[in-house]
Image (cartoon, rainbow, N blue to C red; front, side, top):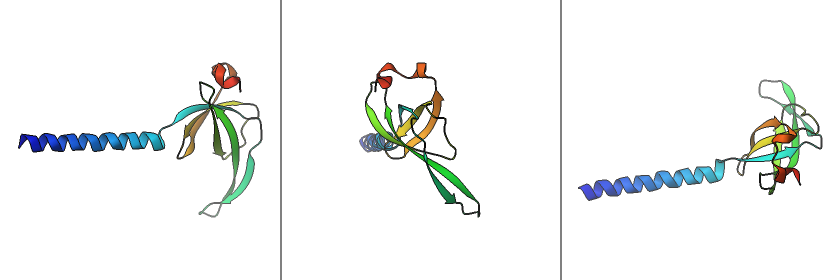
Length: 114
């Protein structure tokens, strides 16, 4: 009886561990740094409630703290400040999850070199 119990516990631990790894690979984020050197492309949208709005799409090259590049797509409902530095949380599955403006001094040197 004990062998069956511990066998089930081991299987459960393996399933939970595999699920955590899968989630981190697909939805985990990594910080990348981008500089807004171009304006976003505007796109008019209509919401289900009858109102309309504008989205701005930015296709940028981001760099991690070691200088490795990654194409990132940022969609925002407002125009972002030109030449600003952003720290974005990038996910392979969802692209940019969140972002915050940072000062140039806060950007790692390897990311600035590119």
